[in-house]
Length: 333
Image (tube, rainbow, N blue to C red; front, side):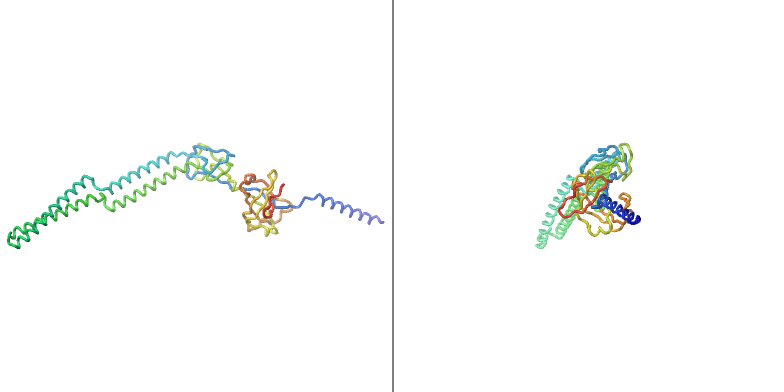
């Protein structure tokens, strides 16, 4: 055998041996998609500027809905509420005065006076009627008839005057326009009290959801602006997994699909639900950069772990995501 042919055979054999060794020791192909845990943090701050007087939580605390987080100085708001409350009482008292009737004693006197004029009127009418009949029989003269008629007219006028006086005493002291205007004043005062109560209540800030305190951004004694964060919270429902899939895998995914999660030192059988698929492609982000995927276009996908498993994932932690069959569990690591 010629030397050249022998060398070629030896080189071919060495190449085949090397390929066999590489094939047996090559990394296993990726069985899922690489991603990382992420979170939407809640930055809790006051609705109005003020000095922080109390901080009731520390980093790492677990808070429940209604748990006190922090308080601000409320001296000015308390004074404002007292002022508004006093103005409301004054407005209500003025409305009551305008809407009330005269004193009961005055009304009783007017009622007695009206009863007296009614009695006089009844007597005058009876005398006039009797005198009319007597005049027709010539028992009395024209002068007596005219006098009885005059007495009846005077009694009628006195009765009407007494009735009007009683009606006036029974009416509210203020005119209708004054009472209407005072009603609006009372409504405005009540609104001012409600606003002052709201401002005072805002000085005490409590948690709206169950969450973990992940950061403290202000301390008692500091003056905090409206909306400036004091406490950062992380509710379990705000933890999610963000991963990236190539276009060839996109058709096999849909919102609501069950997925499995695995990571270093994570418990087995972590599962979740696909919640979002980005409609625009992007290059593989640096956080999962690798030589094999550096030039590939991928789509960002997000999935939410089960609520009871969410706190087992830590934001920033690398996570491997796998597709699950219906009613299956996440594969063990």
